[in-house]
Amino acid sequence: MANTETALKECLSSIDGATAAALVDYTSGMALGTLGGSKDFDLEVAAAGNTDVVRAKLRTMEHLGLKEEIEDILITLNSQYHLIRLLKGRGGSGLFLYLVLDGSRANLAMARHQLRRIEADLEV
Image (tube, rainbow, N blue to C red; front, side, top):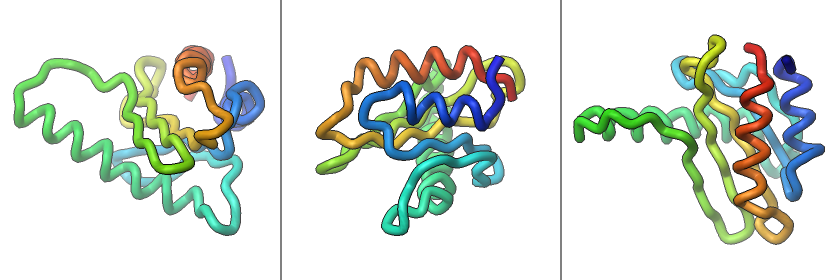
């Protein structure tokens, strides 16, 4: 089982193109851990802002009566992918892993696969 710090380090080291990662509580909007980012990319602000994305999607699904669970949410920008993976099990309720990928270096399918593996090993 990996703790938050170990899981975030694994995100950046094992996922090609990963530039930043965070574990976020979408009930409060607080990042429980961050790694990466830059002076031009405030990971704390991005993590908090993406809680609104998660909340909006959950609210929409509720209004539509969808009984599905969100696996992940993908936001594509001109040069980046932002991947939000909602955690399941082992105390992960209300949490998501947030991953920023360089679009020119990332393999999105492999990133999703690796993020699922990291999630499975994460102990919150």
